[in-house]
Amino acid sequence: MFASATHRGMFNAKGFLFTAVLFLSLFTSLTAEAALSVLSQPANSSVYEGKSISFKVSATSNRTIRYYWYKNDTMLSNKTNTLTISSANATSAGTYSCLVNDGRTKIRCTPFTLTVNQIVRITTQPSNQILDAGTSASLKVAATGTAPMTYQWYKNGTAISGATASTLTYSSSTTSNTGNYYCVVKNPGSSATSSTAALQIVATVSTGSAQISWSKPTTRQDGTALTATEIAGYNLYHSNTGTSSLTKLASLTPSELSIVVSDLAAGTHYFALSTIDTKGLQSSMSSTISVTIQ
Image 1 (tube, rainbow, N blue to C red):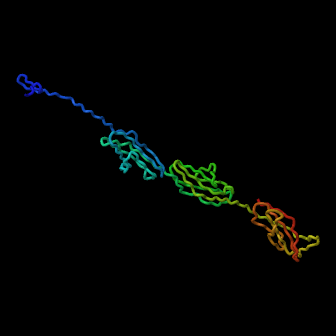
Image 2: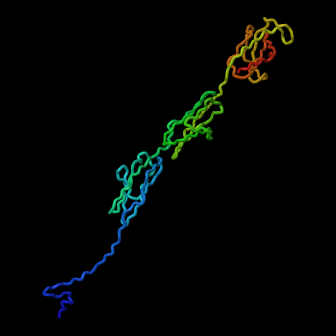
Image 3: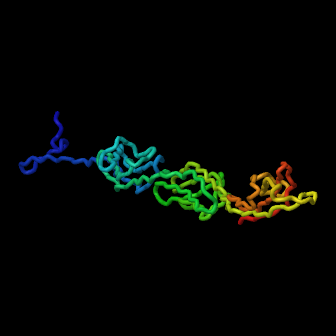
């Protein structure tokens, strides 16, 4: 009613009892886990004030990956694989790094720096000026910003050829330099336009004087004699445009036979004289003389 010892894997040999144990090889199929690997990471970068910039780290693992970002060794709140800095300013600059963690392995990326470049800011504006022709005229602008910076001056809205310095100078100004000026300052990431300054160049007039002299007339227009005692005075006439537009400049006494006329502008001036007798009769104008002031 019992199975034999042999069937039960047991046998007796020389008084000893042995148990034969059959070992079965058990094979367990294990799936190899992919190790955490960082494929790409950020590098040193620069950005202009007010602009946005993003940094991205790329990693693989068959486990859930978590990302941690640091600025100057202080952890940031961002926990994604992309760090975006919007509207960068001076405080955005610093040294950044990231840490990638899949729960089994941690990998810290190489630290990288962010440089924030300054946009152009006008610090000194050009000023309105009124100057005499022939004098030196200068319009100046000053600006701050990350180099390189370029300058371009405009007159009445048109770019001035060759005017690419912070100062625009006319060493000997003329009335043709009169106008409204402004300057556009640029660097690779920004530009700024100065305020508009009015430059007015006033023509200078050379002045001089002329001495006009005459002799007492001895005859009237009708040819009759005119004595010195019959002369009551003289009228002097002047024009700076021509002999047909003479106007009275001065009334003179009978003893005045010359006069110095001052503050005459550069150009040709015309003079004529008439005589008034004691009866109030006035002669016709004398022949015209001209004087040129250089």
